[in-house]
Length: 294
Image (cartoon, one colour):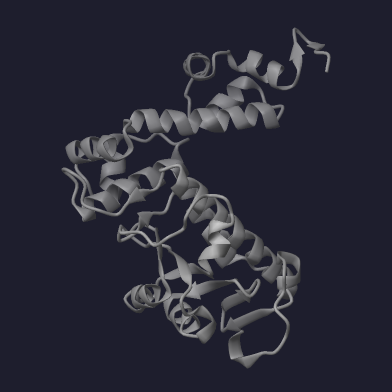
């Protein structure tokens, strides 16, 4: 344990909240004798990894990006993780240092180190990492929250990796590494602003790519077009609103980014097989205003 503490190792997330180490605004949680979690800037995380308990462990290293630099994840040995953190400057991130047997036991196959330099961190995982880093909860509550977000981040990462859905950071075909980062930044922008009136020009300008390179590179990396991606985010958001709120269908469509109800209804029907109103009724177990039998 850190700082020579002799306190017994906690065995679950709730108990782990009592054992939080901090360095200024950074935190380091010891969850068990197999797993530790760190939240903070690269220098703090590097120093924390230098402790004996982290030797010969496997590290999931999440680094959040900045302007035109995509967030990334690496699955590496502890020594390699420390080297990466030494070159990360003021970047903030999350580290999971664990015995390989612990990660393997989560049920997503082997968590052996990768040959890749790393993966682009999907928007959903960026949100989990940011939640753990930015929480303003006090004391014990902060530790419990960070432990929960950290474990969710680990499980979701291993699940997505096992499904082959993580995109390696490599020069791929027509894309250089720099352009790959910009393409992923474009997808993150869409995920955050899909309800706005996005154009190829506005996305390309924000990410530093011309229209041709943006459209070609996006399809090469994600096997779909930008318009298809925008539509998917909009429709998934609309589906969530239809089943989770009582707002009018037209209001739901507008909130998802559709300028008129007819285009929203057509797109929704094409994607989910039912018009929005019928989809809501079925989701709530009602047809024609009559509750369906259980």
